[in-house]
Length: 141
Image (cartoon, rainbow, N blue to C red):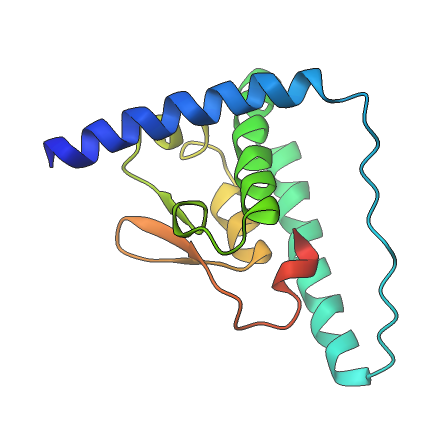
């Protein structure tokens, strides 16, 4: 348990550093190429996931104080960015809900868990784990 706490502290410090580093990189343009998906079934799945994501974002924006949302959104963005850039690295595929940083910045936000679920994270006992089982999860990041 002490080892987990030490790892949580290291991860939190690294995550906060990456948020600051990313703020400095805001001048770069991030663009996502359009995906041509002509299959109807996948399109329906994408639409449902987009609807879930849109609903989660609406819940986040309408049910949280702006300062708490700003701090939490930075962490949510960092989780997405890290996973998007490093999808095969196990440490970025899990978000521990007992981590102090998660508890303080994300865990208290109304809609945060729905947001993570809409991105393809599956809630486990004390963490969220990203799953590639859905064909559209990577495109959500």
